[in-house]
Length: 285
Image (cartoon, rainbow, N blue to C red):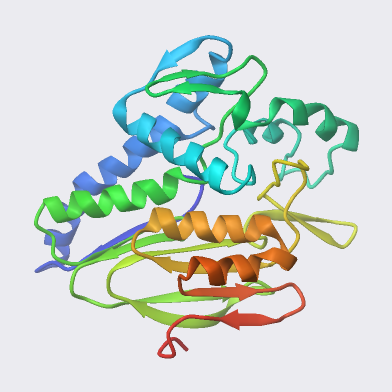
């Protein structure tokens, strides 16, 4: 999934934990193989390669697409999985800015409203692409937790690239990095059950002319999010936590706080100028 992942379980011994982890690891690899945009054999790659022709999706993929479509509607188009086409212009390994004309030429190929989605049939217009990176890791974290509980595992933590789902009776420590100095911890909290996710401009980015360009792209402009620097959210599950944190980042400095307060979930918001708004429980420190 392009990032470090871990599974932690309560078990009677290390060998017992390793045995319990095997089916969960296989499930994680299944999600990687099915939804990675980097793998030419993945379902996402097949959908993009088949743009212009209808495809019938299985129930799992259809549920993820349904959720993404609902997010598009609720966010007034800020969350848009068709922004995947922007990856053809942005190469974060090269640290080179794309030409403004290149971005502008891609914008007509972005917009979920152009997609014909009649569950389970998807018709992606020619020239468009989807990228499920904004939802599939969170969805997978929740799915792995459900898989673990179905095996009878009573407590565990699933982390897929910083997207976390915790279940059971144990409490698990979770650290939040300082966006201004990612190697330095900003806050530690404990979580017994539910989901936790952070979206920020400091994990995948490049610097150009003294300015940070993050991998989170605004589908309406085609350019990276600048501020806030990071938003962390706790919710009942990882999918909701990830959606809220990503949307808050996309909303920008002027709107994110009022929207987060309206949503009503515990959150931490860090701005580029160092301001911190901490609405987690007082026990977090």
